[in-house]
Image 1: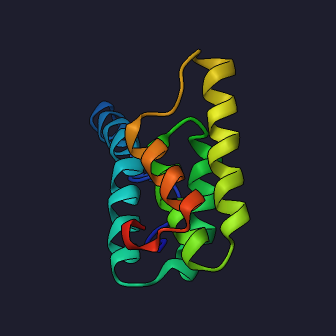
Image 2: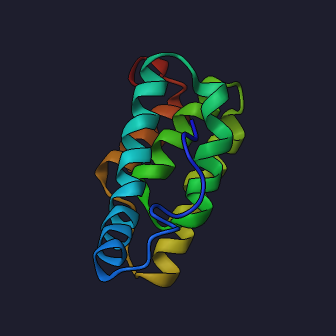
Length: 120
């Protein structure tokens, strides 16, 4: 899923390049999450797991990353690992933010607990 490496415009030193790099660094996680959703729809869950694991490490409190990771793990036969990811995120959110995961992640967790694969 990785199309490039390194910071954008790495060889350009200017205020404009700095602004562009900053803007792209804010947009990059959302773009990776959208790409992950497309890969999941295409059935590429096994190939997607390593990239989502890396992204989940970078953005450990981001539910929009943990959800697709849980689906990819579940579809790849790693059901227990998918549930563990949700539990770990829940614990982190409670400890660091004082809040529970939102409804989409809670609903996904419930589907996985029921082994209801229609919604995953």
